[in-house]
Image 1: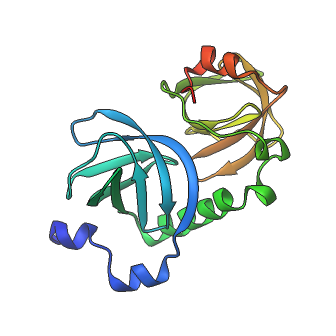
Image 2: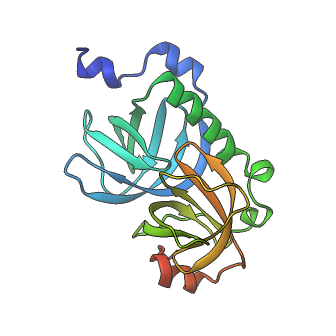
Length: 202
């Protein structure tokens, strides 16, 4: 088995090959003690993520970041957070690169309404997705805005299928590796999202 240092320390080739993308994504992360904390992604590549957070992980500590579920290890602490290296197969990193493209180019890939609405991660991300035939599936909300949500879920209803996320009616508009994106039938009010999903206040 390789040493822990080899597992999480990025190589020089990784640093050169993975271009960091500056993004503003709100999410949550879990430390080894299984406590979860809010965070904001400062920049990201398929191999590394820099997080701004009040709770700082210690170098070498394993982390799961719920921004599409990324597993990794803390490599260094920052003044207002920490940096982590992503532990994943080459295939997973390729898919993460595709997700980064999605995040960095919302004007091309996201719903038009999402350009005007900030995405946030709810404090309680657990929810239920219900299909029109009554089937229900547990899911985890990655982030959501007034016009839609990205959820982590084991099943992938076809694009265009009508669904209910909690009490919000919408339809599936996109698939990605760990789940689906949903467009709400109507633009929601901030207080409605807060009541339904316990979203953080600005």
